[in-house]
Amino acid sequence: MTTQDPGSNDADFGQTVHSSLVSLTQIVYILQALGYLTGISYIAAVIVNYVKIDDVRGTWLESHFRWQIRTFWYSMLWYLLGALTFFIFIGYLLIVFTTFWVMYRIIKGWVRLYDNKPMYV
Image 1 (cartoon, rainbow, N blue to C red):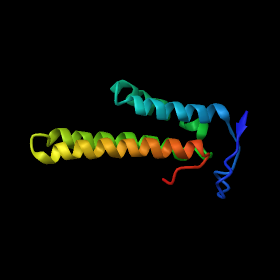
Image 2 (image 1 turned 180 degrees about the vertical axis):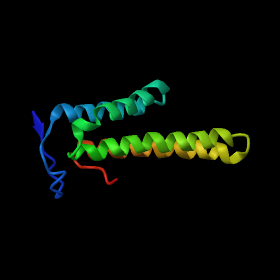
Image 3 (image 1 turned 90 degrees about the horizontal axis):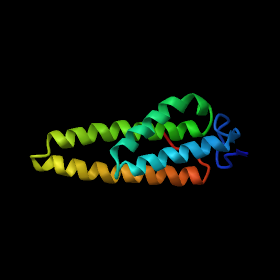
């Protein structure tokens, strides 16, 4: 079974992709969301991204993979800065802000995936 991106006018992103790749992208969003319960699933999500990136290259799903990878690395940076400065109030704020930012990116990406739309990265 294949899925066509109806909302994209870009020739690179308008091609047909296999539904298993859409399912894989959804699984990565699930793993990222589960990262709040088990941190290891957040790491597993980015590993899946790097292992399977070649399979989605040139499709509209590549933008989701880039979105997911950037979410991981930027969140790690901001969580690290928050942890290093936790004992001054700014660290606590960084951790709270980063948590909401990651939730926003997971939800936004998942909704656009459901709508068969590429991410704007």
